[in-house]
Image (tube, rainbow, N blue to C red):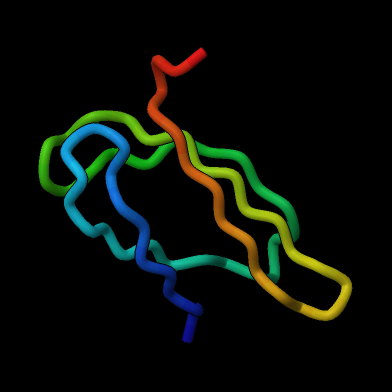
Length: 62
C-alpha cells in the first residue's frame, strides 16, 4: 500500500489526499485538485531514512 499525505489545495484550500509512490525516489509532477480541478505542482523528496517530504504550490506561482 502506498503511503498517503494530506495537503491543502493552494487555490481553494480544501484538503486533498495524495498517494505517494516512495519507491520511485524524488519526484516533481502536477496533480489536479479533486475539488476545484486546478493544477497543483507537487514536489516529493525521499530522505535517506525513508522520510517523505511533500511540498506543493500553485502552478501559476512565481
